[in-house]
Image (cartoon, rainbow, N blue to C red; front, side, top):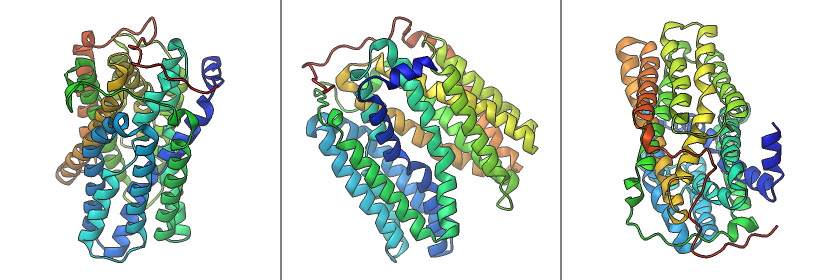
Length: 400
């Protein structure tokens, strides 16, 4: 814990981490909020699925592009524009009574303009702390983001059931707007100057560590989406068990991040953390009781935040400063595509073999992620001596 306390005492870290967490918080509210609101509007889960698919597809396509544009237009300007446009699109879904195709278009617009807060802050972090503190900082960031998945779904469900789905979705939009503007207007974000990259779009994927973590992130985050569908299928909508089990998994991730995530990243670290996740997911189809699934999902969650922290550290230790925003953008896009594809495959398996089908997809996906991380471990940097990046082309003066 003293390691994390030291990191948080670094100038500007606590406020930066809090602002970006508030700005990203609606991510944990939007999926369920849109599902409830659009289904109620059109009395169709298929309609809600189309809007959600448009949102995810737009975000997956745009993130590498918007992150790359931070060096051209400036980090603050890009974040301000995208935050406002995305919030307006989401607010349109909440308040407008329009045909389904308009809501689908608004969902796509919200995804295309979703502010790249996570890539921006992970690009900023190496300029805020000493190299030896960067690993623990990434671990703390990955751990705290689990609060999004613990509190977000509960918050949107409470608002939608206690008041109205329109009110719930509108509050989520207000949080995104307020948090996004707060983060964008921080002095350190405004002072962040990212030199233009000399690579073509997608060129950063030629870096083997980056391509590796994009693929591994696709598989392990996709595994969570598939397992989530499986857990929900086990209990349906008749009780709180599914929500409790998923919250237990997120709590496991928080505990894993606090206890384990700050450890030094070696060539085997990502594989070890993915193995922990895979063990939980593999066990899940064989223990389909409340306590059995709770235990299995806790174990899977225990490896999640440390694995995400390792992915962030590997990117920071593998590419030039100018290329880090786009690299993190590809990582985010890979995870979004993993969620979409694994969720779809889980749905097909659930229809064919029952609720356990989604859990099986989760186990297979997580196992593949662990195997790939282990087989290609030599392509990962050894960060025992800390994360050493090439310096930016010009010094960045940050206020203390």
